[in-house]
Image (tube, rainbow, N blue to C red; front, side):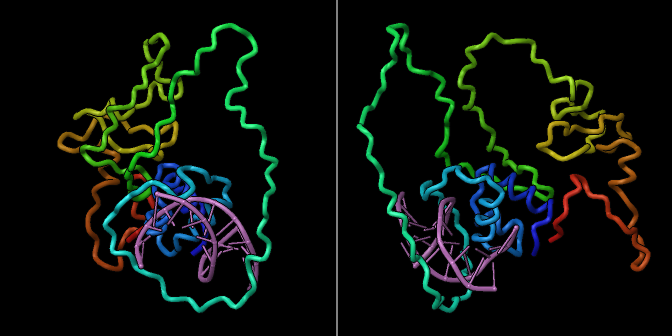
Length: 224
DNA sequence: CCCTGATTCGC
DNA sequence: GCGAATCAGG
């Protein structure tokens, strides 16, 4: 397997989404957990609950890789001792000015959560019914403004604009800044407009006379 | 042992 | 650039 743009994109999304390397590897298929980690590092993205914490118990019948023969090569030769100068343990440099020394509020860092996410074809985030995240608002100390939906998607049909009368055909990919929905008037009785009904519902043709490109929503690759 | 990510290093 | 082997921590 090679790292196509699609696969890299999925890797990034999932990695940044908090998925474990194993989950990503399984989703991508054809690659090992190590491959995913290695690629992630090479892509520059690392960190995250990096070291080795976060107890996350996922009942997964772990498939063990075949026992590889030991590597007779001499490795681990150079172990940088990293002589740390051990700076004086000054916990707080203390603000010079005697002014307000309020500790920076906004504990914006909320992590260590057993966040479990999965991704569907195309790499969109799949959430369960109870997977919403209500406990987020860390309270914006700012004054609330009339919510400007950003000029980019001002006249686009967002998720919140969906109703029974507009076409739900996704335009673009979820997660992208300009992701939106068709928004046309639906073909009565269908969730899509006439045009996209034609894309969503296609007559089953006899074998040998199949349409070449099966247009899938989200344009997701990955056929399993 | 199981899991995790990090790192190394031959290819 | 890739990823198995290995390391290291929970």
